[in-house]
Image (cartoon, rainbow, N blue to C red; front, side, top):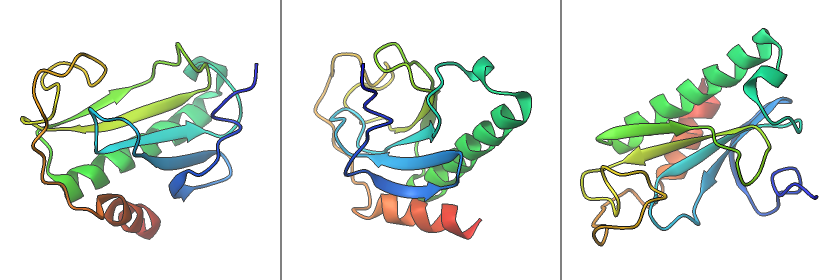
Length: 134
């Protein structure tokens, strides 16, 4: 099976290192402020990584969370590492708002309202600048 994360194209990369890349996700209707933190090598689980690499990955997840909080002032940030559909280690960092389509349920639940969010159009560029400045 080809891995869509390994074979990714047309990503909006906000930050990357040899081990990790951070992308903005713009194709999730219920989550208009969504980043994905991806371990570059194809591994499935956090425990596939040595402890130092786990710390490196989680440090980036926390940096993305902090940048999104600074730019978007969300009610909550959701962090999730699932990998059930694509077993390539990655973390979802999702800004949540009282008036998003699913709040307080997960973004993958059925929408309960039409979202009425007023997000900055360039939120991902603002997050990118913060991540690259760190």
